[in-house]
Image (cartoon, rainbow, N blue to C red):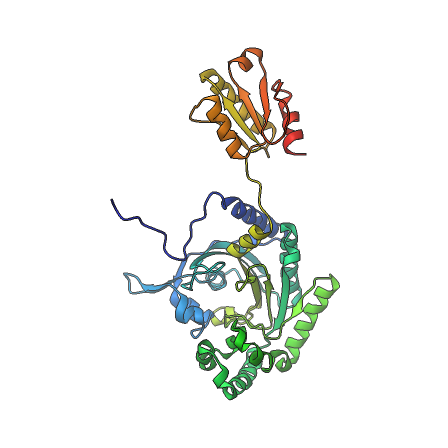
Length: 422
């Protein structure tokens, strides 16, 4: 017997039992983007490796350790995309889309070779939104309000909080970096292996450490808000005023830095305590210098990305969706099968939200009732010789202690509505 082939570690199948969550999230996001007048952009999964080196940063964990990179037959170095913003900026420059304000959204798989764990996978699905050409804090606020609306519509807003910070300008971060390196160097003996490596490459990322032993050291480190320039302070103050004016709650987190080099000024994370270590479900901020870094005209920009797996895991932890059929149609004999198909299609036409499963593959009454009960349906509709002769349909209540009934086909929609939708 041939050896079984399994999925690559960290690249998971999405099974039929999980698909309703995905369909619901994807449909809800597309509708939300339409309401906020964002347009969809679809981007390649493969890009030139240099794109991510120039945008994310050559000394970030993503570029140094996590990207899937290879040389193709033309000796070009290519990478599977680890995130979406770089590709969105590249496409916008390449196709001349940045001559006016633009709002885009995208959804698709991203790839990072991380250690797989719940909420962190090597192939993961990311939704992102980007806005170009708007320098003020109003667009930052609108994107935050957009996501707050999404959490509320999903019914998970009570399990999520917004953490907010400002990184200031490149000059701001350089001065802060120097003092941060000086501070951590003085306490070098307390740094873990990752932090020692980051001390000479990306010291701000030390602030993101999840090592409990580092908490006290990080808490006493210099904080970035003390280094902000006047323009960044004004922008951040304007954003907070807008959020306060509409009552959107947030927590100031001076240690929030994000893991990508292109961020400046506003940065934020939407976090939850329901998912353990992988508690960030959405994050973003400003990247006003990124378009120019890739050869375009200087263009202010802000955006965010959401990991769909984490949102779905959070939904699963809170809710259990009902995707069972409302109705199971039991048929006995060829004529009843024909009548059952006709009835099923008629009911689907009359009731677009109805989930109806018709028995296929034959079987006696006992076998079909067993399938009906296992399906989770609330009602079984029965068509056999007796029903066909009388021009009626028998109705069996599978989840209630009620006697079996008979109804005409014209009466069925009202019966189904009472039992399945009220």
